[in-house]
Length: 247
Ligand code: APR
Image (tube, rainbow, N blue to C red; front, top):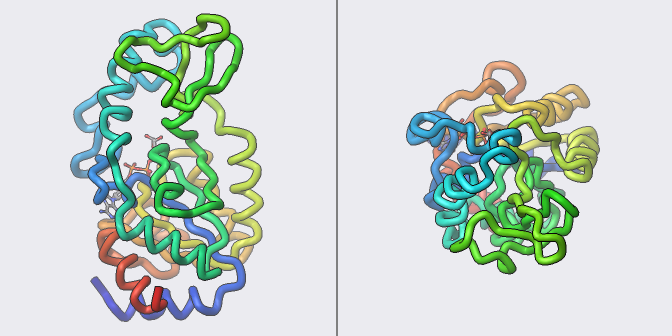
């Protein structure tokens, strides 16, 4: 890992007036949650059809069996790693305004970040496909699939963004607003392939923000909008940033 680049990044962090973070699956890999693409990526071995909204409505039981295996059985016990924890300390110390995440794993909140915008929703909430009632996942017994609504017996779906579904309006609006206000954005662990999420760092760049990117290999951002590219694992780079900020 190039320590000089970390020192340069910390200089920008100290100087920034409105810094935000933009995270993808890579920030949670060292919490034991596999990414979707790249080495160990979920899509290398599993067809994403179970996350297509049309398939879910047609075959809710089959979809839920896969969703429970891939997400619920793994995420419930996942713990934030040092990258999540340093981001939480950065918010607490006033360096960081908010985290915009593509992840559904709730680990930023578990680490202590208060201002988290979940572009792809969260596995922790279920919503009824008939009456739109919302439940915390603790109210559903996922040993009996598909879970159904207490109010209308409709089928419950995880409140995550399926393929061919829109981004949640609140998260989308706030994320675009944050990107426009930011003078510095710290991108951690994203392939930068999925839209409209990947638009957000570009908006920040177009409104004058500097871009720091942490990834184990270049992404679609690296040779287009990134100013400082730190090729490292999220935990390694964030631990060093935390040290240099005395967090
Ligand atoms: N540290 C830093 N970066 C890492 C690490 C690590 N330890 N491990 C992997 N990465 C990087 C990979 O190099 C890759 O660029 O994290 C990125 C993971 O890419 P994806 O799996 O595509 O994750 P993401 O970009 O968040 O995907 C966006 O795609 O399938 C949809 O809804 C899903 O939210 C997801 C969206």
